Image (cartoon, rainbow, N blue to C red; front, side, top):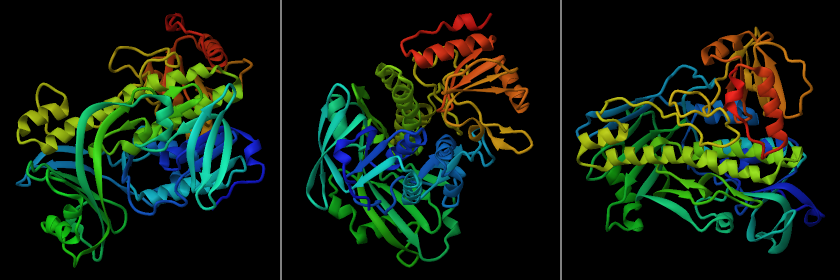
Length: 511
């Protein structure tokens, strides 16, 4: 356990991250990788060593690749073949297959994990850096914003020592009951989904291949349930708590085995954990105020039916990290943090609304109507695909278009480059990247990397597909703009990244 260093109260950190779950640890790693001085504060003394999040996707793994833990993490995961929605008689109502080949992100489409494995790897990565101070077992009690920093009143829970710590910016990754959020906004916009579910994690005592590798949503309106295949011997069931049932009643060992008796018995497995969760759907009314930001569950809550809760927080971290770095290291105006909420909030909302629609299918007796609602189409379809929403509009997405199939605002694909087959993200790093047809002889700022398709011929095919001479890819791997004039796009990038209030006229690119 890390204890406060001598003189820590005299130091002003660049960013303080409050909360050490996956979102906070990912954000801290991205910031520290940019050379920022990072403080991580968490009220828990150690990793919570029981299952919580059990799923993440290819885009999320791409962020873990940037952090440097993806290859090791893959050893602790299993690849998810998809999800099936079944009625009470076992008939498949809806199939959500996940591609088993490598996707455009350079990874598998869907993974199952044991969250403590991820948290351990993220923390080990941070502990290898000398620009990070960790304070586990430290409770933030007060937040006071000043003109050039934020003062955090904290208590070391092991010693009861009071601390006042300082940081230029603070990001609350402190969960659904976030303290930081209380200083940012007056609450959350509620989308109306609120249900209590019992989550049961089991450890198999013997192999049970008959349970299958697919996630199963049991759409029984009398008692909806979910089955999840987790890595190794772990298996999970999520069970709706009915009106009138108490937490004590539903989570008793006798009741749990009764509910699971269709599939498994105490001879097959041991209960690792039972917990009652209230699944909610909400987004914070504001994500940024002054020197304070929120991310992860502090900013949004989604029902679990898409497995996108943690993924959405990791996307927050990737979006926010480069903007904080741009402010602190390149002198950009702090007002650019407004773009964080503008881009991320509608993106998160798209996942929340889709999860609510899928929840409607799981719960309703009118399954024909629910299938239409789940697909968000006029006619129901027995198969669905993962959604790919665009980011919300901001001046860091100058090429954003109203056309649904336009690539700006969505991730750039991760190609393998040259004979070494190096992944694109590993070549360019966590910086803004301009990909061009030819070499540009220009003086560049530290935060722009220029890649020529003459040097990496695989990128020519990408530019052909995008019908562009140049493309601006942001550090979070989202496409910001396409252009037919690479020189002009580079000039505009430099202007925008050094003067945050500069506006870009995308029409001038396409001459």
